[in-house]
Image (cartoon, rainbow, N blue to C red):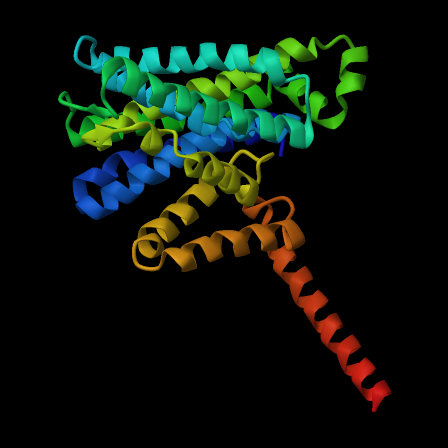
Length: 325
């Protein structure tokens, strides 16, 4: 297929997904809509995370920080600003923090970058907690202005579709090529004239903008928020797991994995949380060992290769057993 045909195919798939998700609240139960809302949240978070981290291979653990910034911004601003203005403000503040954070830590790679982004997330969470306790005299915020369910759902759906659309556009642009060049060989990209520092900060800021906007939209699901809830590290860790298991370097991998994880979360987490966490770990191990490209790389030939490999392993095991006898 040519690049144009692939682009048309991706846009048609995205349009079909958006149409199906838009119709879901009209015939789905409250439980189904709630599960779909969680799914769309992680589609937006993991797709935007994969756009930067999947291309550059920088492992960021700061998603929960940007999510929490957006959530707190929405909680504070909804009483004086409109719904869309609150979301835009949450995305803008998260972007500003990402630019500052990126300028400070994006010269590092690997474990150092991951640890520092996680450390800065915890720093922001504790700073907000200190401000709430010492300055405002509260622990959290009670949300009094809450939009209706369909408004929240359509907003998160729009953010998820926009995240995938931005990924489609960026991956076909010079900016996307620069991101992939950084992931392949950053020093070589620098020698070719790529301003790697600026490119990394811009990519990091895009990820933060979506996380902040999603946090601002999802904050109203709770009538009461506190730093522990919205700056929860589990949100960031699950975003990373979804992107890695789905295929961080692929376009549709995070979306596929977000659907799988949302179903697992709603069916197992409340009734059997241990089994849910074991399932996450098992999926990650299997992906790393047997599916490094993620769920998006699954093909019929992949199953054929697994079948041939398993048969070969059985034959070799049988031969060793006969030899020992």
